[in-house]
Image 1 (cartoon, protein in one colour):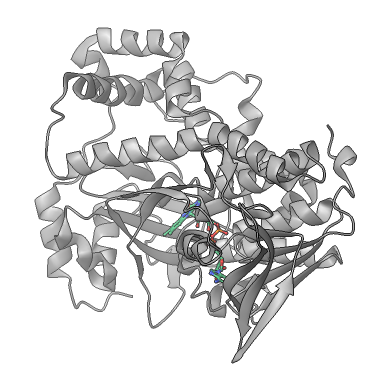
Image 2 (cartoon, rainbow, N blue to C red):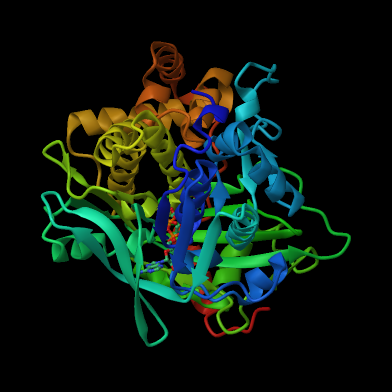
Length: 502
Ligand SMILES: Cc1cc2nc3c(=O)[nH]c(=O)nc-3n(C[C@H](O)[C@H](O)[C@H](O)COP(=O)(O)OP(=O)(O)OC[C@H]3O[C@@H](n4cnc5c(N)ncnc54)[C@H](O)[C@@H]3O)c2cc1C
């Protein structure tokens, strides 16, 4: 079925979307493309002005505080936009989003890369999360089919009696008033804080199944803008993103000459909580040669909230909810999407791609089962399990390994030891010496293939075993430069506590 075939299949239907974050906006686009009239209820107020700078500086987003943390928009998301929502991609680029071609700056240790089919997909989008939302908001508002009501907090669902209950509307509060809105279809896009289990329990529905694991990290982020005439630093031997077990960091180039630096600090290293302060944060930046040149005061100046120059965010979880239990939807007419269903450690940058994929799959499921919302929900559950769940499982597994390493515990089981050696000595080094392994990494990183698929193909396994077989001396030629000493670096950061760095 082509995109043209799906037009108007929901004509005459009213859909209500709970939450106007990435998932809610994507869902509204998908539903309005099919002719539905959509109302988005968003607890936060609208952006203050029609401008991406203002949106970044003063849009209050208490319902989605992560908007003021670094966001990368992976190749899979950009390809989905390119192939199915080209106007959105064009709008993002027009607003200053950058296409970050990951083959343009490969590791210097790789032999020269020849173009291969598929390489055109290894392009991520660099832009502030507030800019991303602002562009999509503007685009869906222009469709004439979507109303976005700001300051509207959903407090419950309504449903026709039955087993399972058939959701037919939502209750929401606007100021002091409680209101009801009827709907043929309700999407829960209220994110990681979704109250769907409680709302469903109030309808007498079967409880969704849920599994939750801590990601084991806390985020610290600061935004900067390049000074007039300054350029981003050229690539050097030190990476702009790395995981040293005791600290993980990355630079995120964005729109409007802005970039951000994020540290993900393991809960196992509580001393690093001081990175929430400007002095220690900047001391850490200066200690890491991959990012120090970016934030050099001669090149860039910090921007953002003067009262909270460093944004901190904890409570980062991996969580999966199942809204189809024993092969039956727990409620019909109710489509939970995005973080409300699959929430993954932000470190892997997958959440927004998952959100858009999920909304897109909902559209395909509705197309495949016109007029049968229960069947559409079952189809969506199947397709999301295939397309998104492998990445959820990969996040959980990678986090388990990362927590173990941050705590300094060796892998005990032989299988885990072999897997760790395969990944750390084989795959990781392979990405720096073998284009086949490098591309497998890019397919995994950009969510085109799960880690099992990308690194488990016979070709990639063979190449990785070759890297392992060539011995330590060979591998040391391709290893990343050593990180700075952990104790010295943390002590330096502690010493700068209270220092009034810019
Ligand atoms: C620190 C951090 C960094 C991240 N970095 C990345 C990254 O680099 N790349 C990436 O792809 N993903 C990243 N993510 C994940 C990404 O932010 C989420 O996956 C994405 O926001 C999910 O979109 P969503 O719409 O489901 O939820 P959200 O974006 O959280 O949106 C939910 C919306 O619902 C609203 N809402 C909540 N409750 C109600 C209610 N009762 N009534 C009405 N409205 C309500 C909220 O105000 C909010 O606007 C990061 C996450 C965090 C926490």
